[in-house]
Amino acid sequence: MLQILGFLFIIIVGSLLHFLYEWSNNNKIVGFFAAVNESTWEHIKLAITPSFLWLIVEGHFYFSNPNLFFAKFISMLVMIIIIPVIFYTYTFFTKKNYLVMDIGIFVIAVGAGQLLFYLLLNCCVVNNYLNHIGILGLILIFFKYITRTYVPKNNFLFKDPITNTYGIKCNK
Image 1 (tube, rainbow, N blue to C red):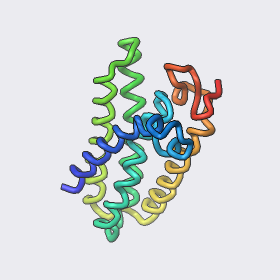
Image 2 (cartoon, rainbow, N blue to C red):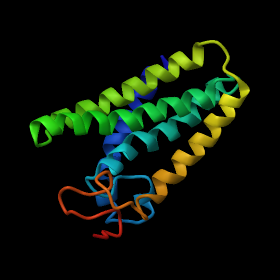
Image 3 (cartoon, rainbow, N blue to C red):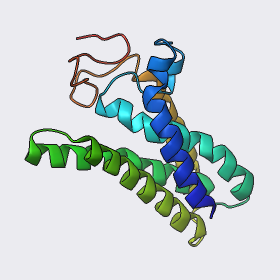
């Protein structure tokens, strides 16, 4: 039941984060957590930010579970991978993107992440080293996702297809 609530929370909060930067009058602090443009990278943030917030709730219920951090790390990795892989695969064939498909990809990625989290949380106890890797992985994801908005790489993942700019500074 908690994973279903998490799924709904991530979908709803992620959807709101799509608009929050603009609603905040382009507040750069809000840009750490909300999408600042239409790049794939910023759309991945829509799943990551609420997943970190939901981890606070999950941690309350599952803190004694030795798989918690490894399961959350893997579930976030799945979301990070699914969104661009499906997006670029379908747009390769269609030569354009469709809003309904983009929303569907987001829902699929979050659903897959939450399902995997549940399965890993309830499987046999993972090695303690894997949990340490999970903690380090979560820290890395967190810092990459808040800093790459301000220091984006000059590649297709970070390029806003509407403005042809990168990140919050809009570097070309």
